[in-house]
Length: 255
Image 1 (cartoon, one colour):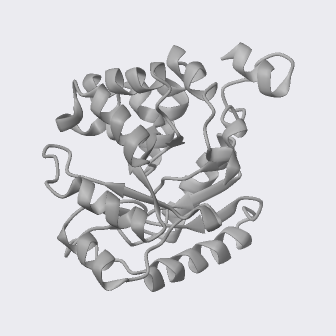
Image 2: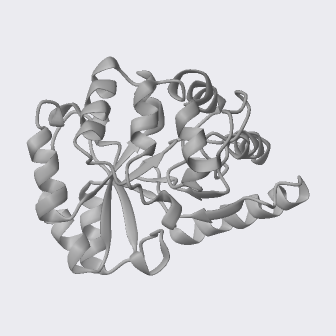
């Protein structure tokens, strides 16, 4: 990590509490908005997570609550209301130096297809770049995966597949992931804690393969609770692949 810090900031590497991820600028995948999904439950919880991510060096958080069928029935209006609530609380708590924005993590299901067909507003990030974060089942490849991707692109969205290293149906299919990115224009986002083996040893191996192949466009913390930020600091940051990952031409600092 020392050489990475010297590359971006010069001088000796800092202590463990220093902002090692400051070069990324933005975290574009987290679940800090209170009371919307399986992430932060209260505003106080959100503020604790916000402090932890600020201490890691992030100065912009694009928070992406789940939108999933009948389970997490979040709407753009509800998500924006939670964002306003958190912005006000963050300013009152002296955390106003972190830019807070919102998008969503859309689950690829029949409801997402209906939203596309109906022209329903969907939350994106990156301004006019219109990046749209989506996830799929971890076990089963959706039969309409490429139909949805085509639909998203035809409506001007730029699809970003969340944590491809966690989908077991993609294991052993690195060439197919590369084709999805190259031929279908799907950008790929890796979870930083995958490098610590937090989700599984297999997810760690696939994350490393994606890094070796240069197939990572964004990284995110996917923070739901303090266990995620603690793991990131203590176990993910020291990983040798962290330096290799952060040397890729990631798009986080363009947001």
